Length: 500
Image (cartoon, rainbow, N blue to C red; front, side):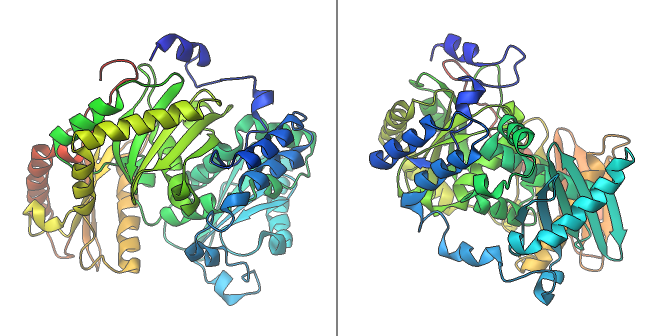
């Protein structure tokens, strides 16, 4: 790929990509399947009328049209109940939830609630807005309130207020980090430019009109916070495979890159198989989490090739890129991010060529075998004292972990362990006076967190383990990680149009 056109598309500051003037990019919102040309033509007619930012209702119409053919697929049946629209402040199920997330506009308009129907929470959202406005009127802000076992964390991001209410034992910093992910998810759909423009024009605008059909992204993200350690680690998990197979895949991905390709990745469920990037730019783990979250949130992506505008907030929160999504197997997915909104067919042809070369090189069979072998067992480590561990490479911002085994096969036990891991991670990653070692001895387990060379290691043991025994086990674990580093991490990423 010739680097010059991509360089022209990037800001001189190196903060991201701008393909066109932002005013013309604003209407490009929603997920659009290019297999339905009639609907695309319909949507383009709407887009041609959507240049006026004071008419966001036209943008919402574009989304509804582009989602029309995936109406039954865009939200899997198993996700329908996750909206919990029958719950509310007067409902015991709602009040007994251990964690809530609320998003509202600065005018008090409900935008999102993890549980309950937003329209039935108007008075509750209004109360939140009144509390925040009271402090703002005195040129002050409220960040956190503690009430018994509940912690209320508030974040103001431009025209949006985000609130977390939790009794899970997570700290203010951890909850604030999760609110930041939810805000990034909204920017992923809208961009900060569009978000600001809408509320500058209509302060009382109901943003749910523009987010219609994408609530599942926020729901999936909220669920993932207590299921995946990647979010609090700020890292991504790679698919374990032989270094030879990974090298063949990386070499294949870097062949014949199409014009306009900014990032390309091959995913297997929540695991990264391969990645390509521009020479001067890297894909931030947070942006990679948002792309993976989008793909995992909707079964509609599995029905064909999909072309959708996306904003990668850590790369450039002011403009859209365009993502090509295509599943080439039950769990194997290509995600190609382009600076060119008209390059769908080039991305499709590139994907077909890559799949052909992977099949000829027997890579697809190797990937299928790696998927079947994931996740691996703690028994493979050969350290009997270990119950579980997470290892993060701080230089590669990737992590690995074995499959949870007893006693962490139960949902509540796994959540408890992740909460302790979160506390350890917060201690090791503290901006001021970070700890080099964290030790927690509880009634259910003992957890050690430590920085060893270029790794952060978090390990769980029985509750009676001594520090000395735990550190001996971690030293043995480190040796195992070093021997298998090429299998569990991606050590080099090919550069688009060049070498790794």
